[in-house]
Each structure stands twice: as structure tokens, then as C-alpha cells.
Image (cartoon, rainbow, N blue to C red; front, top):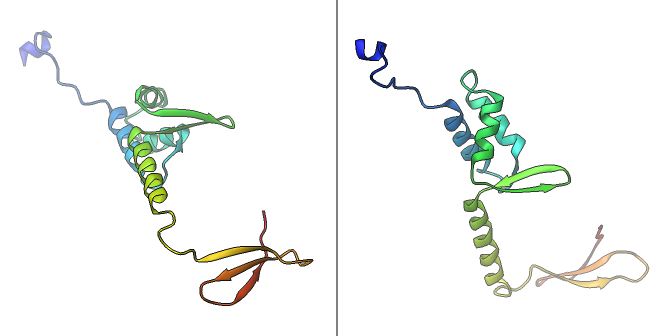
Length: 133
């Protein structure tokens, strides 16, 4: 104890709360969404570290993380390399499956003077469906 008092031995400090709260925010935010606003990451981290973290500390920790960032319509968005890899894998899976099954419906073109699209369902007869853009 005397060594600690004289500062001869380093004092064991708790891990910064910002690190664990940002880890939780990343895990929590990317469960349902592939891309989230950076603001949501900061908000989730502040909720997790309530009383143990500061806004500046959390913001700095989020900025220090190796995230893929983009700005769309003035909003700062972020994703991870893992999420990008999962999205790419899903797109590749969908492309490989194209044309393997017969379609659920075929658009045959607009019906004259009605504004409805003709849809042929397998093996049912022809139906008319209103298509809006």
C-alpha cells in the first residue's frame, strides 16, 4: 500500500467506459440494419454507458473506430467491413439464383384505356393490377 501511495507501483484503472459502450452500440445497431447514422451509434453508446461516459469521449471513440463512412443528404452514415461483406454475399447469392425458378407473375403490359397492368399468374388466368410509381 505504501508503494501505491508513493506512486512507485502503477494504479490499476478501470477500463474506459466509452470503449465498452461503443462496442455495445455497434453490436446492437447492426443487428437489423446494415447502415446506420453515426448519431444513432453515439446515442446507443450514451444509453449504455449512462453515468460512466461523456458525449465527447463517446464521439471520439466512434470516430476512432474503423468504420466505412458516407454522407447522404447531409446525414453521416456508417457501416462495418463485416456488414459490407454480408451484403455482398447476399447480393451474390441472389444473382446466382436468378432464373432458377419460374416467376410468380409475368407483367404482360398495360391494358388499353384502363391504366391497369395485365399480370399472368402461374397457372391461373389473367388478372389486372394497378401499378403505381
